[in-house]
Length: 109
Length: 395
Image (tube, rainbow over all chains, first blue to last red; front, side):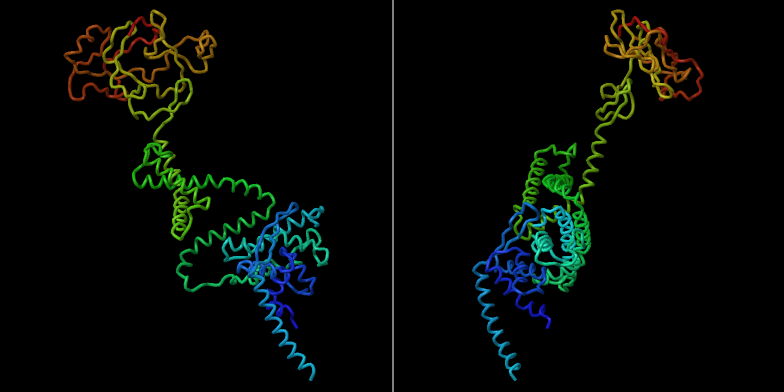
């Protein structure tokens, strides 16, 4: 199964979860997602998602200058983001439960 | 971070060019959207390249970043899709007319953006752009000045020198427009749609009218002054002078009174200018009995400019020793005779002249010389003896 298609639907929740754990900049979020097991995640997809969540007001953002090179844009959670994450977590558990039930039933037969 | 290693610089240059390529691919988005979407992209790309945990192929210094990240076009597409922005090249039917009208502007803008992006790939461009950006306040002032010039020209506030106004209204207009232009440039006073439209209109007028206004001013200045050539080879600018005739201090001379070497007034002197001589001459003054220099004794005596030398004591150029001052070659060996009307009041001077014009006829054309090209027959008009450099006359 092509997990990249699955990923598209849950990337928002995954990104929110990572940032909720700790503020992070673009590639930092990518690395943590991959470390958590989402190896297929694309760099640009994560950056785009971060921008979109920020634009919709679910994330805060701040720039940290770097002595060595280009500046980094960090993202952090706010109340709206936390609420969004809570909703998505609930939706995911319901959906996963449904899917698990469906698939286990098929599997058990 | 490997950006501190010697290979880090390679990475940074590659990263900057890849990021520029991605920005170039984000066509159809506003500059703000592109900036928002790619802010911090360089840092993310550099960190991804430098990440020791991922052993991607092709991350060696100088390697093509497309091996690691894919083509800039695909990368940009993924970025904008994930950000929820519409795809490039989606025509919007309800804005068709407007799209048609603004097509030339968009073509120019995107071409300029492309050139800028390509320039930004060169490392040497950054300081140049920095310098140009520092000049933007001057461009704001220039915008105000050009538009003020256009408005002044339209409403007839045109000044004598068009570079700067010379009326109170003109100055007020210039000041107002400069303040508005600078405030707009600083991002102030620019709220609302109409302000934005006014700003676009003002910039357009300034860009379109800049060259005509400059050309007009230069032409205007060209009429105001002309350059004259002085005897000793200096040039000087002088106020506009009458085009024809004898001029003293910028004023046309309406009459000339001539006296001979003996100081006697001469009637009917014919004067020719120095056109046609092959050599340029410098002149020396005659002197009166008290040693004062006289410059109104004609023809002036002198010599070729090359035979003059600088004299420190006198503080001017003088004729070299051993060179006799002489008259320049006469333009005509002989001038045609003239006839003059005999005025009843002319007797006071006519009686004392040593040699007078001999013409006595009267008539409507009397008083005008017939020109040197006419047959040079008849009695010649008498001119003062050119060989006498030190007249005793006191005019």
